[in-house]
Image (tube, rainbow, N blue to C red; front, side, top):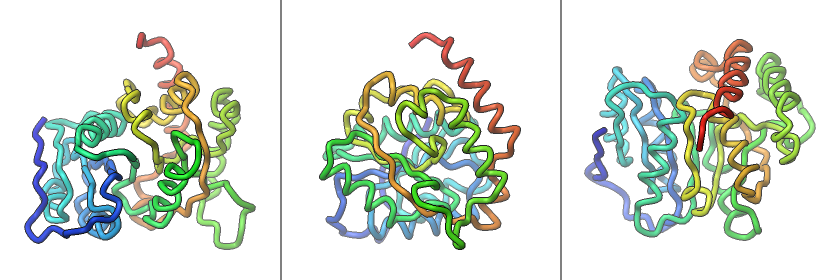
Length: 245
């Protein structure tokens, strides 16, 4: 694993949100990640992007955007990339709040601001984004198949229901240092989302949900999860329960 903590030339002198770190897993997102990171850094100057074995120039794009860069020499999966990124971020001076943020442009800074504000002002350890936090409207972008998959995962997960979560596989999460220190994801792939829920429950993290608006572009939809992937996530989760901690 190679690390580069230097910002690109011309980095901003921005004193806002210096205690917040965005953690961005990246695998072959070279066409969009520079724009995503550049826009996010206007509000959150501290971002670590984990290049998870990309072969498309993602690392160079991350560097141009001025984010901190951590590289996996081979593709290990999103769960591994998130764990690596959180470990890097929590080692940085002054880091208090951490956000998992997608590289494909689906997540919005306005939602991160709202979630971090709740961490600052409410007795919660982790705020999880939900696409189902309000009545469905005409502008709802969640595709029908994805809605079915996400609802099915919740129905089949007693932990998710016990925590009161409606969208446990939303990748936008904001959490405090306690969660960052205790986080230990072992499931390297997409099933890390179910493991995150298990950790919320087993560690007793004070959990809340925040409605977020996901931007479904043609690009992001082309990388989305199918119903089969949802089933694979559930299967991996059952395997994960058998692994010793």
